[in-house]
Image 1 (spheres, one colour):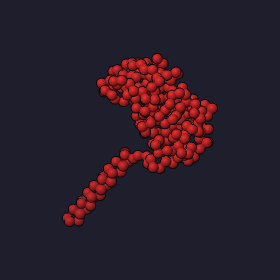
Image 2: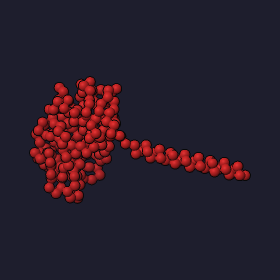
Image 3: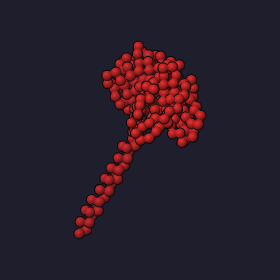
Length: 221
């Protein structure tokens, strides 16, 4: 009888520690983060070294002419710095842009938009008009003009070497020559698309995934 109870106790102990170990392992995997102190990783077998400030997570896609990297940094969400939409817009680096306020009709309700135009460029921010002084969220945009400056010094027309120096300490020439598009994708569905032509930055586009359907294409307005 004593042996029976000892076996039961042993079995319960094994189950308890196994479950506890599994719980810790699952939690550790769920909360796993990219080690930003380790800046080097490989793209198509070539070693690159990213700057710590870029906070790159993983390579999403490296095929054909497009390189896409997951990123979680302040720059990804505020490439022109924070934009205050309410009560009086504070556009920061985009102060030369004209302002139009519109209401975006969606299938779940209305969304307040701050539409900024300058030359051939347009940037659209979404915000909640009931939150006084809140930051606007980058929603969509297309940048084609060289006098539009990003917070990290990026601008249209800059050469490809200077562009990659913004994000990397080392980025091999073979990779620069290969990719016509460099993309940054955030956890919340915001994407930057940098397009190159003749080794120079030709345009930058911002896209975002939303859980509601648009009633019209705001970039065409």
